[in-house]
Length: 179
Image (tube, rainbow, N blue to C red; front, side, top):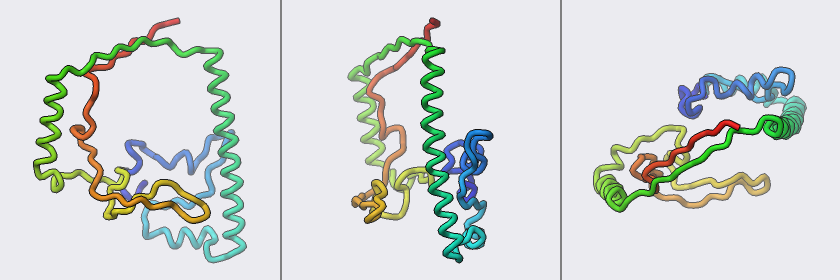
């Protein structure tokens, strides 16, 4: 996260804190390799045992043990939340949706047409935190431990401008009610 000046942290002040520090008294910090600069990675990997097969095996065993601990922590946390909600129900809410009228929908379509007929490609905003915002036409969908992630061809760039994701309602309001 530090290597891209926080862009991939999406607003989190210290996105790696949970992994680095864990949850005091409940979950230890992850046995990951943390760096602030990419140039530090080779030395950090060597210090973590990457050059020593026995140390690397111990490290990988520790990562697996951590994963088991993390899964147990997450299960327990979820059950704790369910128990808490049973004892302290969430406030009820009432929501109202105002439908989008044809005039507003026509204006959205006009905005989309203006966007795509303009020089949108050269004005395109790209950040490391945007998925598939990279110099590739390959799109990885999910990891498979046997054959690796399948690749689906993807051409063009994703649009993150609000005009590309128009609202289908004029407004959506919710009111919370006390018990």
